[in-house]
Length: 222
Image (tube, rainbow, N blue to C red; front, side):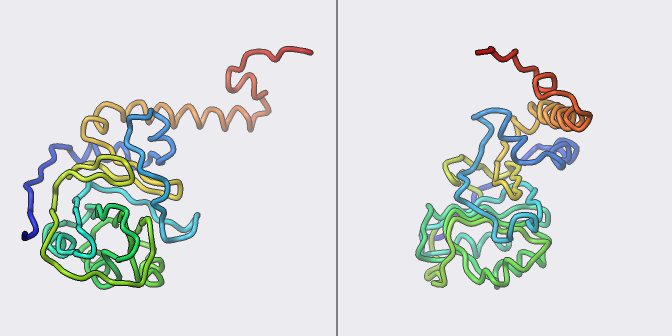
């Protein structure tokens, strides 16, 4: 069966997306269990402190390893600023993408990629400071076959549903995928959480007690 291309549309506005531009993944997932945290086993290639932020709307790919036809087809669909999200079912034995295809995405201005499966050529991919890559596995074996899969279909990445157009955010702590409904309805909550954390930092720096800063109940004296 040939690769299936599904229509994809998102009515999120740039302003709605931009409100999440400064929100860390930890702040986003602390908003609730329903937010869309992706399995922490999907890790960035670069070391902590050197990982560029991943931020953009998802173009989803469903693969049937070792076939990577959907990844190839997505190269002509994805646009600058978007994130390629590959559902390879956690497959560990065959890389779905390496430096050739990733390099093409990078030249197009794609924001980065997430692979729930394996990648290769990590010496090159991990050296790019402007193209974040998150993956579950690393393997040297390349794919074979380019006949199956789907582009812009709903997928499951690390236990979290991801649909085309969802906002994907990644940093040193992990990944989260936000539906358009969450992007619109929870931005204020995320901003308030960030402001509250800034207040905790100020309070502790000013020498206030932890009990006062965090509103703790008095300790019982034994």
